[in-house]
Image 1: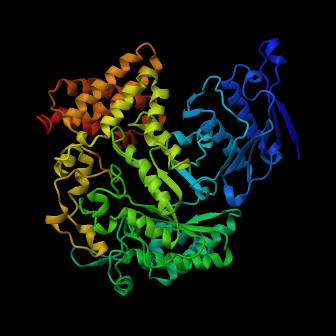
Image 2 (image 1 turned 90 degrees about the horizontal axis):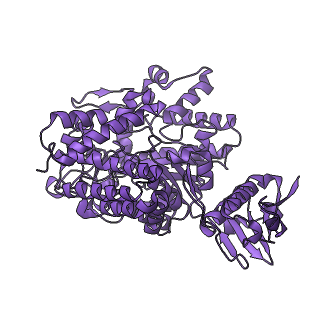
Image 3 (image 1 turned 45 degrees about the vertical axis):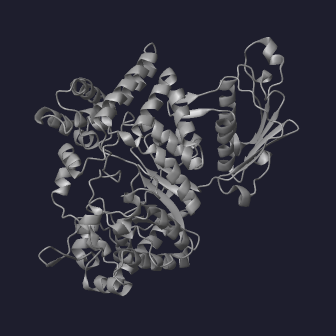
Length: 636
């Protein structure tokens, strides 16, 4: 065990060296925390010997003590200063490091805005003596898939993780993985490797059976599920999960979630089980989570300490009648939630039915959060990713309320799925910053931190960018007169999907019947996955004017001016979809947007070498075709 004493000094002048610098005391395990603290303090003070830290002793980690795990939790810490000694320590090295970052962030005013941009306050004067903080994070796990969080230093400083441990460290799928564990079970039993396709070809009876529109029964492999009534499926998945844990000692969490998308199995055995559950809106959820509960109980017989989780998603989103058992959790993923409004307001979140595949059973988001917390450990899973990525979406104002509401409802962790591409996409940096802030403190002042980010990241243009954000989040900017036609004729990628669907077709999965007179209103499709908020022509014109005025304020700073111009790209995008083709702003958007996008793609090898992915994310090809071939926009 090594013990270090570090004198924080700056070699500036002979006079400054005579001042008493602070002394850092720590063990080797906390060397990173010590280095981070020293580097940041030196960036803020020209002479630490003349700072509030002069003559102080700073003790980190076990040199200061060991935090009370009951009070601090796994990632929490104490920050105390008494008699000239500043102590920062947690239950473990992570807690101590979090304490250092919290001290720099919340007390000193350092802001890690993006991986490339950090704000250091100059010579901050703070009162250290008497400081006494005990901090326990509201959320035990704070996981975010966002392009900024791909930077390991930035996400460490923001005290978040980029991925679940079992996927990042052990390469075990974190969702939609029943096929995966079936194959691992078959491999353990048969002594050879299996792919899902090979498993299907050899054991088709393990996979879901469906009744097609002609009444014929079939078992397709593509876009399918497993049959959760088949006893061999349960046995093999149990074997597969135990085998996986056997091979990965140290694993603390493992996920078991049904495959993405399609309806559960409709074989005779499954239909009988649905009938036994009463054919209610949560019947399919009851069936899967009964299976999940039984599997978890068997795995826990050998590994009682491992947490077993699952996505509550689409047909499994609605809370079941069953309790899932000890040491389990679900990641509640209301993928068709309206992210523009609070979870407890708006028709879409309360009664559903405003989309053809949005059954009322999938609504009541606020109530479902509380119900899930009664059945198992609740995690909130937010799906923020949006294509096309340059479409501006007003989802930040409600975000803070929804995250804090989830915490009050009993959520213990949060998992955010956002875009890992194109740092220039709509509100990318601001949204990433707000997300990590809310994961650390869900009760913060959302508008305060939005305004702070704009001021620090955009300089003198910050006030204008904030005015643009306020305009975007003002409901008067949203075009409530638009209906599905708006989306169809603008986004051809959505056309191809809706043309194949029957209105209300998926309601049968929840044993509900659409009532067109009640549910199909002339309201825009809210922000669920793949949906966007139509905006008014007035918004397009006003938003661009605001951003152009902001750009003029920083015209002499090429970095800040470029940041403001990047915020204009989403406005140009939506301009081409909203204003008439011959409108001067539409013509300007064509001249500016497409060359900018071509440059962005050319400078990003992931997109330059994958044009199909670029088109999927941006839709620039479809947008250019629309602008060139269509007549005037919807609004004359």
